[in-house]
Length: 317
Image (cartoon, rainbow, N blue to C red; front, top):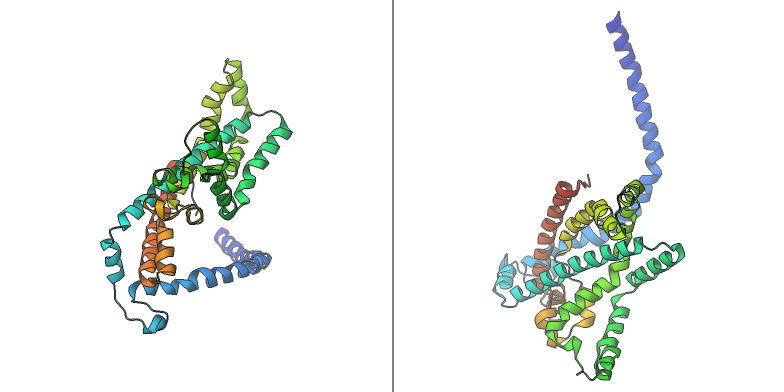
């Protein structure tokens, strides 16, 4: 008798479950419709152009097109490895990208900690707003400002001359290009990067600050022993995720600031691909370099998410 009742209950539950699934699906139809424009854009501008990867394995000429250009296999990749400049370009890319990641994160964390100590609400909001306005300005604008500031007749050299010092052609010296690029990138993005750390600071239990104050800890010790440990998982997480950007050293910024005299330290993979592919019409060679960069970048992104899962407990899926 009990078994018959269980079978009957199961048979009644199945239609109910099917109806619930159908009802949930009907409720989610508007959400799927909202995804259609994004899916179309993704397909047209990201997946469809991937057919151009075949250029990396051809001796491509625009006149012959994809189907008429001769197939050369891995010849373009052999040319990359035989290029004497490729090691220098990769080294420039890595040093500039890693420097930007480290300095940007350090400045952003420091700014968030200092901003968190401000007790005047309107002043805190004003400083935060002004700090991330630069994020919305392109490097065409900020690059022009930097070129004016650091030129021989600019403000910085005028101050040096006023102090009786010799003028310095900052953007014409290869040894100064990377520090200028790294620091200017941090200057542009530190306010925007601090937003996530300020959000993480709000999750720290105020009781911990009260307990530390009762124990006699000043503001500095509370920052070191309460605030920093509280946002340490966020710092670790972002450091891991930034690993996937190691090969992206900032093409727009470098294109605006560099010149032939600073190629030895300023030339990165993206700018080299731009010159080789568009200016010198070496389409196959430039595509091969881009394909190699994308492949290594995919591996770095996978590694970054694995590290984020192991070190910070962050998972996408």
